[in-house]
Length: 88
Image (tube, rainbow, N blue to C red; front, top):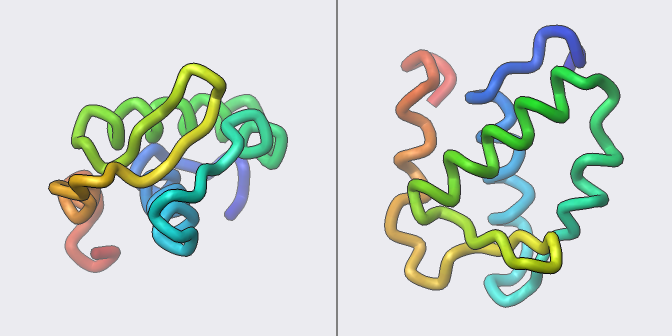
């Protein structure tokens, strides 16, 4: 992914794939996620993606900067509503 072309919907897909690849109880380091980003724009898109996925109750962000799947996992597919139909 080109850092200058990064969008929030693409970052939602990236974050969703990372979270789904982990066991439900395992968490991801928020700091590590941000350190992996190569541009300021990518960091902003990641932050907005995290906020949107928390709002949709697809993930839970803890006080220690850890991110994990929401145990209820009600709306994980709702995060694709911002994507063009071809990317879903």
